[in-house]
Image 1: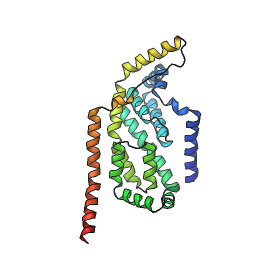
Image 2: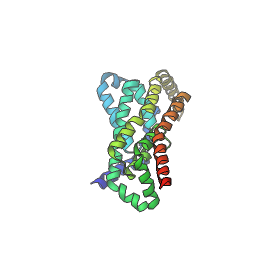
Image 3: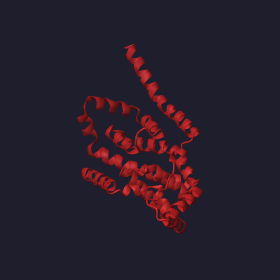
Image 4: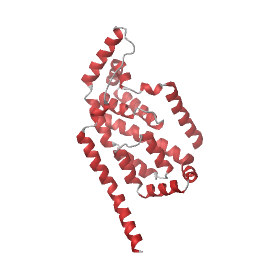
Length: 248
């Protein structure tokens, strides 16, 4: 059953990528349908939020590119607080789904097949799983989906995975959502330019946003400090282990 569910998720992800549907998860889509989306959110706020969360779960579970765009869109549509909450629920739930499927389907078997080095790496990861995961969520050095799969392969406990993920994604989630909440005037300008481009018969008409503006120097510095703190317990544990080994 778990292999079938994994195959279904993989096939769905491949289909979305192959058909180009993943490109619809973009701020350009939001600009093109801005009036209709705003009207629906205003008229059906709960349904709109539920739909946003469901879409975010699908994006995370299927490992589709677009998490940052979804987060910014959440802030734009629902404001920084509700947008952060919706993103938090969607990202954590989607990550948990693919984690559970990957772990139950082939995790332990694949690590054993990968050889002694992989098993040693997995053992080290398990010993400090919470801190490693917290670090990887705070500083996204690797894609969100890859961390989900790696944690499953290394046999991380589900409670540890969910807790570290939930805590670790909060800073960047809030930062990107807050950034999105302040994009109203920029979205309006982009929408006007997009419609003018189409009216003039130009093709293609593109929308451009630099999401890197959300990563302010202050935010990067704060994340760096928190990330170092998250790794301190691992460093202390290894130091103590080394001392005990030398003392024997």
